[in-house]
Length: 321
Image (tube, rainbow, N blue to C red):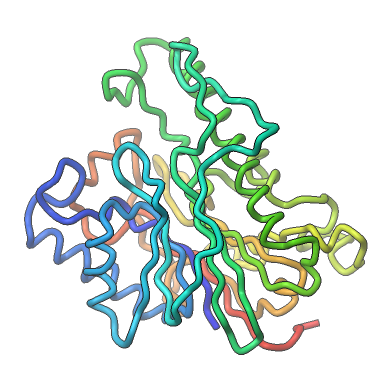
């Protein structure tokens, strides 16, 4: 079974302010996305930046076989949201954007206004596999690409840049905390016996503090001495599969010429032991061919494909250890 995540980059039907300007560009984008998904052949694919439900259905209609789509009902201000493409009909377990009750609102701009909900919802589903029930949550955390009042992508001065960088970090940390709370519900204190995955565009790399929030009890990451030493924390832990991705493929976006792995798959104790392979892009395709993005996301309006590579894992039925 292949399980994956992919930011589809502004998947809108043509004619609106954010998507392709015409039908030809839209069809080119859909064809490029469909070709990659067909090559991946996932059982379940978490997706981000779906601007219109109809656009995801258009994409599913270009794929062979029967596909089911489900989307969060909590889009951001541009209408983008997370969701799933699935071979089997998933059951929605949760669709939420509210911060945990104990977490206070965080400042989001110079006005001092606080927000107590994530910019985009977190969607969790359950589906049946040959190994039993699989619970998966998909997320798209606050971006590191900063925007400023008046729809600007450039600050008036370095003070403004620093402040808005801090606001974005506050938001992403709070959103990661909210996602971890959802993971706790899905694990239900029993990650040794439950197949659980948390995936999506986390908008930061493996060692970032916001990404690390999601792991739970520390000390057993893949590649560390604690990985093969079971302990009580295994019931609540999530493992980031990034170390299993070949080093030359360990990135999912190119930002101003720099390779970054900002899309992640994290899995429970029962599931991590059955991961047989992990990668980015299309399996067996070699080097990734990704455009380099800058500070203005509008520059790629209507571009075919996506500026992200999919991240994926193959999961077997038996513990590989």
